[in-house]
Image: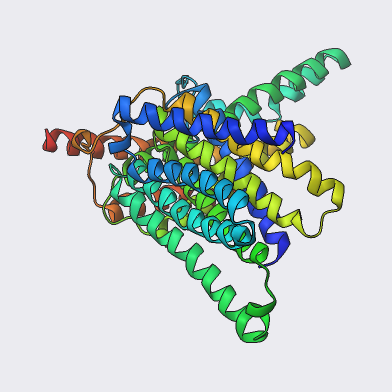
Length: 177
Length: 255
């Protein structure tokens, strides 16, 4: 067995144990998909709001005053709001996974291939949200109107799906009781 | 025997005796029988090695490696016990863990067979250190796979089991590093590690004493499990939701 594999396995094990120790010390139940911090439920944004948030109309209006500080302040605020919105979307995806993990870990017929696929998708989605955050930082929210609308539709769908899953769980719990 | 060597050695003996004494007082030995058999084995192994070293020194090497490999074998059983206790309430995750552990062990076996087939002299040339390093590496991979699964599936831990896992994981991690550098590292490294490796076992023992001082049940007993949905239903739903999300984000990124 190559020495490199031994070293890598030792390092990986140490990192995982550190994660385990840290997680269980921060919160007894607080593990990756468990909401370690209280999840602040935000009221869902309407499509109009998202459209307005990322549209160039407001910027055009502010630009009419020919004031650079005002324009800068406007763009700064818009970036902050857009980022908060993407963060909330990422949190929704996280919650979908959290629900999945909470239910599936007790299923008798869990499948390794399916689980790996789902986890890979979750990681890809979180990476996509990270990419969006970066794009907002680099290009600004005004140039990302189409993008924002897509993300809005996504979060709306996720919200519906989340409600459906919750309802299914509650029905099941009711039947079991 | 130098003072530091003696302190580390006698410290581990004292901690093992304390741990075994507490296991009888708290009845934890019946919850984690394999783990306490392991501790008892390590204690008797240390004393046996000392006796052989003093009275039959020519047999010391054989005794050392024989007890060392027995220790590795019982250690594998400890890993299995961690898996059994932690996932008792989670049949789905337990199934996943079985597959993952089988994958690790089959992978290691396949690698060993491939090495032996490619070079028939491998078995003859491999030193005891090489063999133990390979076995410890497989153990480290198995524990890492288990811990990853526990993290991903948010498996809640009781204080006792967490202590066993952290302590044993720490000891295995340090052992793997020691065996990896035992031959390639220089004399200074070997000198440094000859203290650090046994000290890491003492540290693991301290962890065990603290975490296993009093019994604490696993957070979720099987009887409390309420939700039981068909996995395929859950997986399909989650997959659909994630696919929707991916579709939207993918389109966004294309623009």
